[in-house]
Length: 599
Image (tube, rainbow, N blue to C red):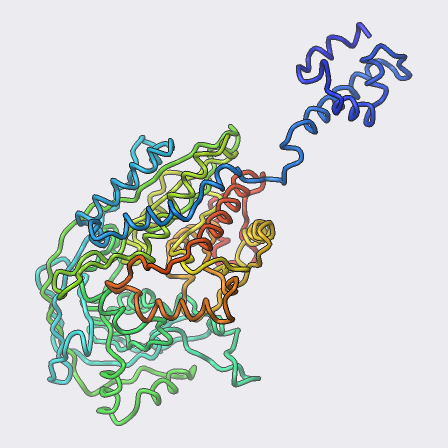
C-alpha cells in the first residue's frame, strides 16, 4: 500500500473518492481499488499501478457532468440567451429610418458600424482584426450613371424600357451607334460542350442576352430538364447576371443587355430598377475587363425588338436552346451616353472574435457571416425614400449579434476560435465577402467553415429547415445531427432554379476553398396549412423585396428565427469542437482550391 501512495497522491482527483467513484473503480479494476484500501494485491505492483491510473481517469471523467453530455454539446446558457425580444430589438434599430437604409458610404453605414462595434464590445468579445481593430477597410468605387439609350433611332424610356449603368469612373462614357447581336444565353461552357458565341467577334458591339441557364429538356422525359446539362432545374453560375456581364466584358463587348423575365430571374422588374437604377459599387481592386455600359432590357421592350426583326421572343428562346445556335445580328443600332459621378469609399467589414480555448486548435476559425448593408436612401423618390431592409438583412445581422452574445456567455470558449463577420456591399455583388476572402486576416487554409445568414424566419416555428447547396461537403452530416437534436429535418433548396446558392456571401468563401453552409426557413410551419411558408416567401418577393416597404411588420413571429439561430449556434459549436474539420466531398468544384491550400 505504501508503494502505491505516491501514485495515489499524484492524482488530486483520486483521494477520498465519492461513493460513485469507488463504485466505478470497484467495477472496472477491483484489484486497484482493493490496493488503495490496503487489501491483498493478486497482481504485480507495476501492473496494478497502471490499472489504477486508468481507473482514476475513468472515475474522474465519469464523475463530471460533461461525461454524460452529448458530444460537442453547445453551451445551454448561451443558446438560451437567444430570445425573440432581443432579436426584434436589434432588428428595429438596424432597420430604423435613423439608419437610412444602411447604404455603403453613407451616414447610415457609420451608424451601423458603430452600433455593431458597440454591441460586440458589450458582449465582451475581442476586436476581430489581428491589429486589434474592429473593422476591415473595403475600398470600393461608386458610380452613379445617368444613361441615355437609343435603339434604332428611338430614345428608350428609363426605367420603363431599360435600366443601365456604366462602371467607368470618368465623367462621361460613350458607346456610339454599334451593331446589335443576340447571343442567346451568352454562355461559353466547355464542360457542357456549349458555346453560344461560336467564334463570332463581338468586340465593340452591343450584345443582348437571355437570363438564367438554357432549360434543356430531358431526352427521355420532356416534362423534366436534363440533369446532365447546366444542373437541370438548378441554376449554375452560368445563369447568373454576374457571369453574363463578366463574359461580355472578357469578349470586348461595348455594351451588354440582359433581357429581364421574372420567373427565370427569380425577381420582378422593380427589383432591377431599385437595385441597378442607382449608384453601383465595384471593388477598387477589380480590374477585370468590363463593357462600357451594362444593363437590363424589359421583357416588353425585348419583344418589340424581336418583332421588328421579323421574329418573336419565344422563337428566339427556342432557337437559343439548340447546341448549334449561332449569334443572330439584329438590324437596329444601339447607342449609349452615360453621365457618371464617381467616388471612392472605404466601406467597412465589422469583425469580432472569441479565441478558442485549445492551444492546438485556436488558430483555426469558424466564421459566421451576415451582411449589414442594404440599398440606402433614394432622394429622388416621392414619399418614403428609405430602403429599410428589415428582412434583408437587418434581421440576419441581428441574428449574428444574438449568436455572438450566445458564444460570449458560454462558461468556456470552444476549442477553435469563432469570428463574427458582418460584411458590407453584399447587395452590390458580394463585395465585402469577396474582399475578405482576397485579403483574409486569418488564413483561409485555417478557416474550417463559414456559416452564412441572409434573412431569417419571421413567420413561426417549422418542423424543417432548408439548406442551400446541400451535398457539397461534410457539413451536411454535422447539420443533420444538430437538426436531429431539435427533432427537425433538413431539406434541400426548394427552388434551385432561383440561384440562391450564388446570391449570398457564403459563395465567396466557397470559391475561396472554405466549406460553407447557408440556411433558409423551412416549409412545414407548426399549426399552419400546407404551402403557408411558400406563400409567405412569394408574398415578400412581390411586395417588399428591395422596396421601401421592407420594414418590421406587426405580425412577425420570431419564434422560428430563434429556433433556427439556436440550431446555427449548436452547429457552429460542434464544428468548433470536433477534431476533424469539415471536408469537401469528392467531385465538388471547390475541392481543388482547398487541396491546394492544404499542401
